[in-house]
Image 1 (cartoon, rainbow, N blue to C red):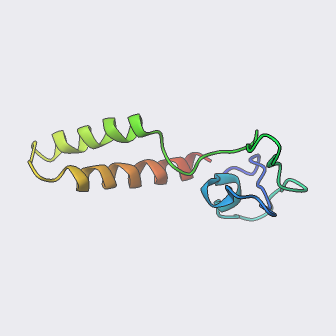
Image 2: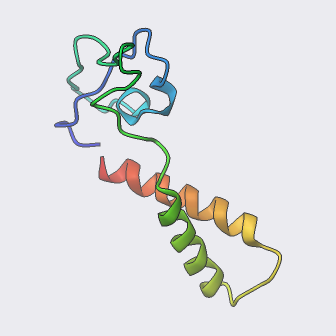
Length: 95
């Protein structure tokens, strides 16, 4: 995770467990927002970064895994979960 990503303390935030700014591993010195920017008026956060990869990206990655494994049948759930895991790990490395 680069040090230029500002993390969130998550106080009273209902979506903090799904936000990378809250769940990211702290490596060394890190800056934090003073308070959670979640707005209860709009039920949203303008600084939210989802932990979960986009479903279409997971679908494409699972298809690539299926192809690389030789087109086996009955393994779609395994390929989906593997694709999701790989994309989450990649996202963690990018941030």
